[in-house]
Amino acid sequence: MKLFLQLVRNENMKLYKQKMTWIMVAILISIIVLTLIVTFKTEAKQPTDWRGSLKLRNEVLVQQLADKDIPEDYKNNTIQKEINLNNYRLDNNISPLYKNSALGFVQTTIGYTGLITLFIIIISSSIVSQEYTWGTIKLLLMRPVNRWKFLLAKFIALILNAFYLFIMLFCLSLLVGFSVFGLDTPTLRYVYTINGEIKDVFIFTHFLQYFGSKYIGLVMIASFAFMISTIFKKNTLAVALSIFIQFTGSLASGVLDLLDKDIAKFMFFTNTNLYQYVEGNPPEGLTLMFSILILLVYFVLFKLIAFLTFEKRDIVT
Image (tube, rainbow, N blue to C red; front, side, top):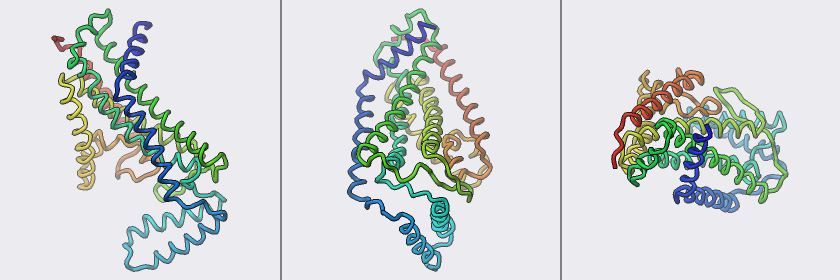
């Protein structure tokens, strides 16, 4: 066990020594600062009378409902939804989550988990294949440790690195938000709708749901890219193929879903976005437990292919 933990520690150190890791950290910091600048330049000050502001907003929205030029789908799915949310806030004395508030700023930046996912795809799809490219694979396997432990150590280091980046994004956004906008937040509640029903949760519960669901999706995508990295020895090929399949796979799932193909709900990429079950519109026939089960099956499959391929491969320089 001690030797295995040392392997994980060594793989973590390798990731920290790579320029790509620090480039990603720099990108996250830069985009948070840029978001702060844009917020200052584009967002109006929070209204002193938020209740009066919401009532005026609802009057405008009601007028839009009477506009015959606006499509009915947009009225029902967007305008009426906003009116219902505004009425709920007024009835329960819950202020909107303004972007130029500390927690509102965090809400604006949590979407940058997508950048972390892209970064992890690149690292996952090269973390094994780069050992062949560098010619270090034979040296690594000379250690008195099973190949599967060596591979598992790499994967654990990878998902730990992703976890650290998620924590960094949240904490940095929170720190910047409170430092710039102050500790006085307009609300600690997050209001949203799911299947026409209004939900009201503690704001940090919302953040936990969002980051947790996105992290699970990231682990699954990383598992897929990691498998690709064990199959192909060429580093650039593994990276390019992983990114290509990630985007085309998501597109294929969307197209099949539009065509009402039952096969779409069994596809890997259709089930990676678990947050759609919290706040979203999941495809018909999908449930949270179904998606979790599908993801578990794919996770085991990806790991079996990766470990069996690596165990049976002849390591040559």
